[in-house]
Amino acid sequence: MDDINARVRSLYDVAARSYESELGHGIAVGELEHWRADLAFALHERAGLVAADVGAGTGVFSRFLAASGYEVVGIEPSSGMIAQALSQPVAGVVYVQGDAMGIPERDAGWDLIAARQSVCYLEDPLRAFRCWLDLLAPGGRVLIVEGLWSRASWNDEDLVDALPLSCVQTRSALTYLLRCAGFGSVRQRWLSAVNRHHGLGDGDVGSRYVVVAGPRA
Ligand SMILES: C[S@@+](CC[C@H](N)C(=O)[O-])C[C@H]1O[C@@H](n2cnc3c(N)ncnc32)[C@H](O)[C@@H]1O
View 1 (cartoon, rainbow, N blue to C red):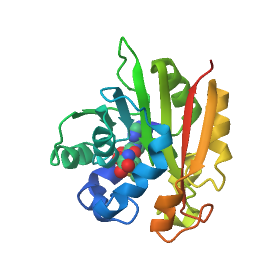
View 2 (tube, helix red, strand yellow; view 1 turned 90 degrees about the vertical axis):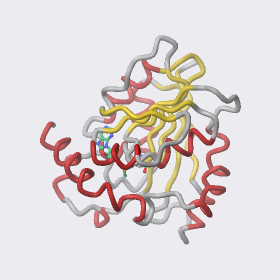
View 3 (cartoon, protein in one colour; view 1 turned 45 degrees about the horizontal axis):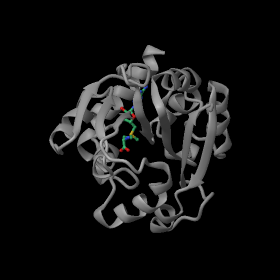
C-alpha cells in the first residue's frame, strides 16, 4: 500500500507546477458558473460551515468551496501540490499534509467532506468512506466529484490495476461503495453544464458527475 501511495505522491510532486494548466484540472473563470450551477443542490445554503477537501491538490476545489461560503481545510499528501496551493492564498482556506485516512477529527464534526477527482486514487475507498461517515457533523454530507476516466487516460498501468476507482465506466460503483460504507441517502447527478462546457455529453468517456451522501436518518 505504501508503494502505491508513495508513487502517487511523487507523481504529483513532479506534476504540481503545471497541474492547473492541464485540461480538466483547473477551473477557468468562464467555467465557474457551470460548477456553481451543477453543484448548487449539493452545497449547504448556510455560510460559515466547515469543510474538509480531501486530496486538495493545488487548492482548485478548496477555493471554490471557500467562495461558496465554507471555511475549508485542504488535506493533501503531496508537498509539491501544497506548495502550489499556498502560493494562491485565499481567506478561509488552510492546508494540512495528510491523506484520505488522516482527516483531522473535529469535536463538532465536519459539515462537508469533499473530494474532487481524488477518490480515484484511493487504494481502499470503502475503508476511507467508513472513516469519513464517522467524522461528519449532524446534517453533514460527503460530496465526491469524479469522472468516467478511461484506462488510456492514466499513464501508469500499475496504478490503474491497484486503484479500484481509477477508470470505472459507471457511476454506480461509487454509489454502491458509499451504501456499503453505511451512508443512507446517496444522490448522484451528472455535471451536465460542466460536461457541455468541455464538449462532452453526460455518460461520455471523460464526463464528470457528483455523488452526495449523508448518514442514515
Ligand atoms: C487529480 S488531483 C485533484 C486535486 C484537487 N482535488 C482538484 O480538484 O484539482 C488528485 C489529488 O489527490 C491526491 N491524492 C492521491 N492519493 C491520495 C490519498 N490517498 N488521500 C488523499 N489525497 C490523495 C493527489 O496528491 C492529488 O493532489
